[in-house]
Image (cartoon, rainbow, N blue to C red; front, side, top):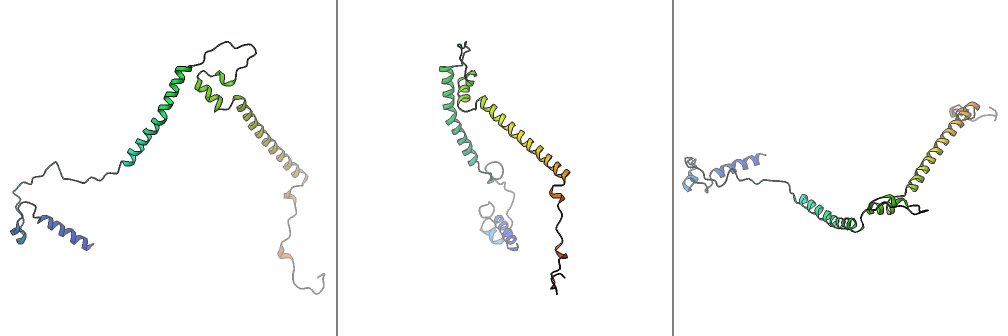
Length: 185
């Protein structure tokens, strides 16, 4: 710490005696006189020249550049496909159904992209209904098992047949393991 303070004061002193400033010549350096301050210091620019330390925005710019690239990479083809489907195929029109024809579940949607999604990606309403019925049946079976378990516990309490009516084992300290003269002692 002492070394740093000595270096700091030496640097300040050397800055005051810098030969690059006006008023400091060889005579002043040798005599260590204080330079005259009647001259105006000329500085170029406004204020002190600073080295401003700011965080790098490289990764921000890189992220935004890649985001724009991938959005355009997927957005342009999707926009072309959607526009061509809307122009060439168009929305479905309501027509009278022939006798005995039962429409598929995906034929009830108006837009062709929605129809394709309903037909190829989403499950049919019948399948959704069956999944819900299976979940309800599973929960019903769980509730039945719980009721049956409660009934069994009630029956065991009434008849004294449960684990809580068992006789506890004897304490091991009550057993005499000392040598005996006769077997019955």
